[in-house]
Length: 391
Ligand SMILES: NC(=O)c1ccc[n+]([C@@H]2O[C@H](COP(=O)([O-])OP(=O)(O)OC[C@H]3O[C@@H](n4cnc5c(N)ncnc54)[C@H](OP(=O)(O)O)[C@@H]3O)[C@@H](O)[C@H]2O)c1
Image 1 (cartoon, rainbow, N blue to C red):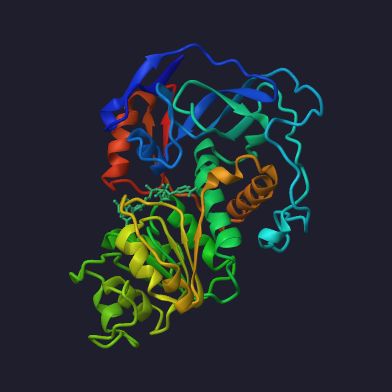
Image 2 (spheres, rainbow, N blue to C red):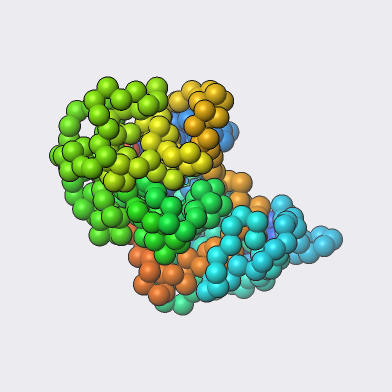
């Protein structure tokens, strides 16, 4: 089969098309003929060996696929339960249409993956191996695609959708009426976060995006206001209303050592009040200046580090302002089918109701994976990118 392999870490050119044997599904696994492989910003970190989880080389990148079950592996020995599955907190079942619960209420339902059959359309979460014509996935991380949902839409709701869902529910503990900041609001995760914010209970929704066009997109997606995420003090197009708006802090107001122009812009965009929740994937100064915009008992969730800049924090800074910093990494859900299945069903149901429209950014031939990585890193893309192994 054709696959895109990384034999050394580096730039996009390190991604090379090679011929590899079709992998064999082991016990509790399924072999999927890949129709679409999802691309994620995190893949670019992996390619540079700057990801939180390190990979041994050679490696085929790709953490999610949509396709058709080709073959099912032999049954698991013993309990019949797939490897890595555990029973977790029992609680209120979280159905696709019922009221949504917080992290204390994950369903104790469907912990056993369904028995898949050859020919079924599925999506699957992988650790690696997606950029290929065939991929092996644990049945526990494989899910049927509902009729009427395209492979691309299903993929746009998998990693990005589950991330958005859990950011609001599990990590930010979104409460009714909370004022929220969604950074990178025109991106894959950001556009889903923006669309889900009000249906999930948010009050004022403040989006940030790096261009006027992307800010307009964020407003279309449901944000009340969209501002520039710039942190360096240069006034940028689109800033004027927020910077001069009601509650803009007086010059020289030293509230917080982390405060900066973005802090001021976010507070001004919230009619002069500090905000309850910030969701940040940029890191660096965006993170630090957003932290300074939080109200007491406000929460900032760090779920990405696009800027590749680190931030140092002291416990004193947190306690002095009663602020919470929360991290989120989808990897911790991989062995939690109870935290995957119901949220995914909820996302599909919201998409079917038209509440959620996954944004698609384009499909590249498998052999053009390097070009797709270049476009992602250059911030040229909006929405979900996929690879087509048949092209
Ligand atoms: N924690 C997790 O489990 C998890 C899961 C999925 C994704 N993520 C992370 O979430 C982030 C967004 O992912 P995505 O799939 O939505 O990607 P995406 O669609 O490519 O969007 C990325 C967004 O980040 C912004 N961006 C790109 N490069 C940047 C840079 N150098 N500095 C600051 N902002 C930059 C851009 O927004 P503007 O140009 O409009 O500002 C862009 O809209 C990534 O950092 C990704 O690694 C984390």
